Length: 267
Image 1 (cartoon, rainbow, N blue to C red):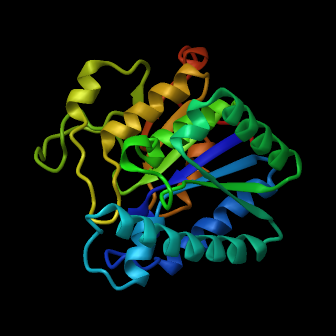
Image 2 (image 1 turned 180 degrees about the vertical axis):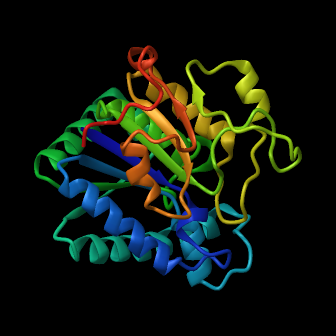
């Protein structure tokens, strides 16, 4: 099985921007255990700007591009140092892969990206992917690491994409404004009604909302990859998802739409 896991800034960091050490340690332990079971793992991480913001003692997310890029450069070092150390505790090697929109939009560069990814997986390495915010201009960014995770899942022919966030999943309306909003457990085909309900909030540290997660789901499911949105507060939830338990919102790819909702992924 080939699995892509994307983790948002709000899952990785406290509201101060500083890493949530307890949660990140737990996450890397669970991911390492899942990889030990034979799963090919690709890890898409947000957090460079938010962590850099915290390390530079900035109270708010930078509003100008140079400071944003500088914070990303500082934060990326902190993230990779942490991942290298924590995955290394469980004898797994990580590789940093930073991409921009140009890397995905240009066919030759995209082929190079895909070849590198597949070779890393063959070498039993965990690719840790982030958008290269330190050099990306606003007009040529991919959009959000949610979207990036969908692109990556499609590029590596993943079986499942899991997006861990600070929400339970997709609701039929905005749960922040409507206390009667109901969580959608399964989405077989994404429609305009789902985007209308996806008026997600954006945290002070992150950039993504539910709309970008739906965009990721469209990309992934079109490529034959299922996707799950779930709350990443407790990384053990990854075990439940892989065992087919009813967790968060599951988006079914066309080839899986006729299966039972609760099927597991045979890890």
